Image 1: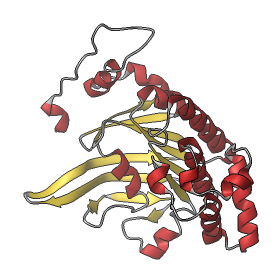
Image 2: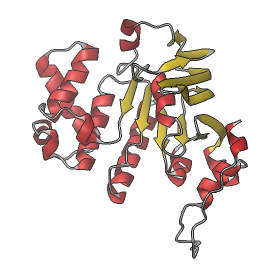
Image 3: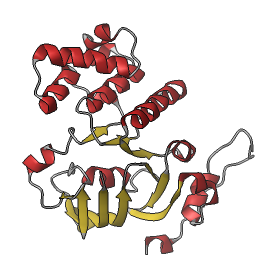
Length: 275
C-alpha cells in the first residue's frame, strides 16, 4: 500500500473569496506510522481526510497527484471511493460520544461494518463483532456488544470505534486525535492497543495529534503543519533536533516535570513561515 500526495491544496469559499486551508502539501506514506502534528486549524485533519475524499461539499480540492495504492483519488467516483473507505482505509474519530450511532448497540454497529465489506450473514457478523471487541481488550465482549453508546465509558467507546474500523481488515488506519477526549490513563491504554494492533496486522498508520512527545514515541516519521503547510518533516526519533523555529517553539512551550520552568514561553510567529 502506498499513498502519494503532491501539491495538495484545499480551499473554502468565503464572503471575501476562496480561503486556503491546506497549501501545497506533499507527503508519501508506505507501510509505516506517520504522525501529523500542529495546532488546531493547521490543516492536519483535512489533509488526512482528503485521502478518503471525506471533505465538506463546499471544499475545493486540487493536487498534482493524490493516489491510494495507484488509484487516482481526484478522479475516482463514489463507487470507487467506497471500495477504499472502510474496506482498505479506516478512520478513527476523536470523540466516540459524537461518532457512534446512539440508537444502535455497539455490536450492531461493528456487525454492520463487517457485513458491508465482507458480505457475511447476520449470525456470522454478530460473532465477528464479539470477537473484534475481544481483540480490542474489552472484558465481557458479549455484554458490551449489547450495550448502547451512552452506556459505555469514553475508553470503551473508543475501543468500539477501533473495532469498527478493524472489521474490514484495512491496510491503512487514520487516527484523528483518538485520545483527546480521554483521561491520561485511558489514553495510554488506547495507544498501546493501537500500537499492538497496527504491528500485528501490518497496517500503515496516520496519527493526527497535538502531543509531540506521544507522536515521537509512537510513529516512524513526523510531519509538522503550520497554517496549512508542512513546514518540517523528520524522523520521529529526531524530533528533539528539529530545525524549524515553529517546531522548536511547539517543543519549548510544553511543560516538563524533569525540566521545570518558572514560566512557559509564548511562541513568536514569523510571517515568513507563510511564504
